[in-house]
Amino acid sequence: MTLADRHMQDLATPALYRNIIIPRKEEEHEKHQKSAARLVRTLSGRPSLAVLVRGIENAPCFIWVRLLERILFEHADPLGSQNGSLGESTNAITELHHLPVDVMKICVNLQSLSVVGQAPPVDASGTWRWLNFLLNPNIKLKNLRVWCYPRSRIPRASWGFFVAKVLDVQSSLEYLDYSFDNQCPKYGADRVNSWAPELQVLAGNYIGGLRALLSTKRSIGTLVVRSVPMRDFSLLCADQLKTVDTLKEIIYQGPVEDEQPDLLELFGAMPTSLRIFRGEMWLNFPTEDDLFQELLTAFVLTPNLIEFGVVDLSSSCMGFFEIDQASIFHADTASHEEERLQDQGMWLARYAEICPGLRAFTFPDGKQWSRANGWWIYRGLCSRGYFNG
Image: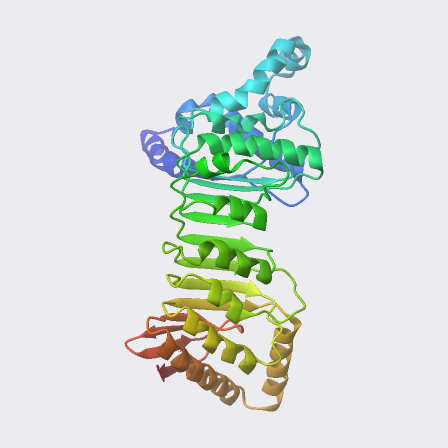
């Protein structure tokens, strides 16, 4: 390697290892673990790289020890392996149990971690031990996302106890995405209240877990709620969020629901401090105008909005698109789009009267509008509409 090549490598290496994405495909759990095992192998051979790591994405919940053994020695001398295989040494296997933890403990600058994938069928020796480095107080995470899918009650409880111990230690968290229901296992209020005192962004899938984590006055600025029925989410807002003046942004991704949602109840339960709302939900309104009219009333309850967007996942929304596509074939495309833009511009002008600070709006059909100097602007691939508002 020439001096110039070495210089370029020295410049590129910190960037390559700053944020590591472990390759992962659905249902290919062994390949996922192999990729993580290769990362362990690399960092164990070059500890200086570990201190460069700031983020790891798609970390598996566990790495089987035998798989780690194969990865560590997949390029080893076959004769050497036969003469001194780890498979023949209990002490060597014990060392393998600790190797991933010892390696990852060196990642003292790690700030962001996402854990995804399937949990093991049982909490066998050496399963998720590689994540035990998170119990080291020298590791100070700011962002933690845990998307783990245990398939039965025993591993779910075992995994839950482990994550709870991590949250006991990782007190510097500012972002937490952890979908637990606080039922299996159930944690005491004092313990939950001690978690993540600096938390700013909370995301989750279960109302029980969200209620537990929102039970104290954390200065949460962004709340992400997934798969919770709108009625339950409205009650959560009314019970625990209505008076939270730090909450500025809500992202709501609702489940399939047959009933037309009560947007007035939802927005009436939200704090008046709310600035941004983004939603994906099954709206099930008879027509778009019915939806837009209800939003007009709902915005009276949240007058400080600066950004709003909603994606309609319901069959009625698909009906809108089918009608629009049919009309395009029987009418001039440009005039059809102009009429639709004019209609949206009219509603935006009315919304801006209620929410004077409103600056960005996304309609269910995906059209994104922005407001500047008193004008609503839409930029599409083929057209641009300007409407005073």
